[in-house]
Image (cartoon, rainbow, N blue to C red):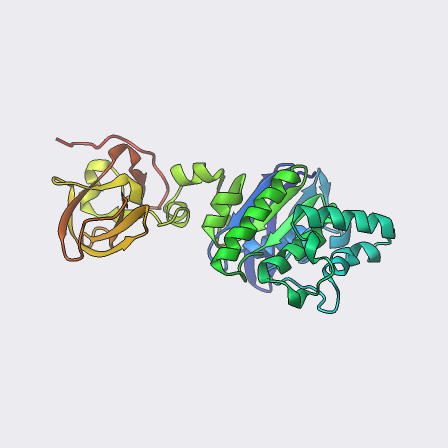
Length: 343
């Protein structure tokens, strides 16, 4: 188990600064997820922690020991990449044990570790198979198993599910969650662009933007209390609805944000618009309503069950007022408040 301290870490590639002064602490045994749009620096930050890239300035410490000058093999880490990187001519057992063999671990000990990891990941029936005889999800589990047998202090995952189809992503995500519960003494850092993965796996999420930390918190903290328009729009599916303009003066905000489940279609709603699209998902529906330039794009309203509203229908919508998020002209949260000047 290891606590990580990242102190004013910066990384430049030539004249381009990619990581611009990141500070954070990752707790021992924590599952921390880095999220953000493409190019925000999340994979680069992971590689700096791993030692695969050299830090330009600042420090990374494991349990108060600065590891800037330690090679990856000396940091007590294990990394799982987007690509499986399995040896095609080796069996599952051989792939999982190969790193231990190189490290000089005895045959009996290698066997015990591989068998334990295989049981944990439901790979025991496949130990004698070659990678080409496995599904994509099974191959990724082999890659994870290869990391487990090393008994690392820190697990690093770099978008490990992005090559899998939707069903396998869900299946493997569950396996990773179970893995974290069974290896609660191991710190895990996980990079993804998929905020659903982040919300379902993380103890805490770090939202990165343009090489800087935008916000760190538990999934529910980021969902319910985003500190900026950027976080509010990035966390949650569908993303938060935003409105701006003169209509918001009574709320003392430059921009307001409302999640789909906090909007209702009602007879005497605050805004009038036209239904432009409807998605029926079975247990609930999403209704898209164009209310004009104040929103910039159609507002999304979540309704339970099957929506009865048709494309082209004129409707009125209103927010649940105590769920309205307020932001200033710089896009920073300014808290929630009761509607000012309302009748």
